Length: 332
Image (cartoon, rainbow, N blue to C red):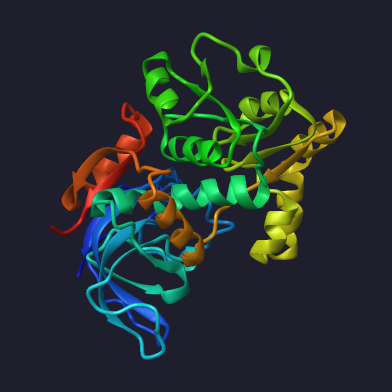
């Protein structure tokens, strides 16, 4: 089976012949038609998460998939061969940059009827991130004010639509060339990040979804109202994440130290900071499928690459220049 693998951190992806997936009793074997590309893939390739995601190399990369069910384990009840599905595999079982992958039934859902395979393959990680940030951790309610950074990107373009569906007033940061695009997605306020300072223009927000970290995150705390919350997906990890992830005591102490400065600043301002590392969930993907088929959420595919272009496609994430997600078309 063909796949693209990481053989050594920081080195380019390599195409390789790998063993066929092992299918457990509760697993579903999927023929991969499309695989979304994410910043997480590049961070894994660079070894940035190797302390909290200690993968064994060689590693098949890829965190998003859409495809067709080939075979199911003997205990699987919800899927059958021929079903068109999509998923973000569990973090311990990634590997969608391949011709086939075995996925736990609980992490899988039928793809939205209204989407192509490429569109469906672009959705799982960013849609689950948006859902878990806005619905689970953010508990966004109608009438609340939400700031979503990098609105033209994969997470941002999805989160704007979901926040608007939840009834929020939505602000976002984007380039002037993307202002019309993010407004069409539902943004009420657009900040040109190249020429405007969002901290000087926004105040009294209930929630910020930050995908940039650093100074951007610190400034985001200052536009929140008392009791507001900033959710970061670029870090730093916090102790709650470390406990959920079951990290050892040394790593728990390390994550506590990494986020101590930003959590302390948040407390002084009367607000809070939480880190989000999204998890796989077939149940949530079923709810996302319903939103897509109802027209409340649409996938944004900015570029489609062939399977053989996987190394180039991953590098394209750093260069940017497109809206939404880049996707590998794996099989016709």
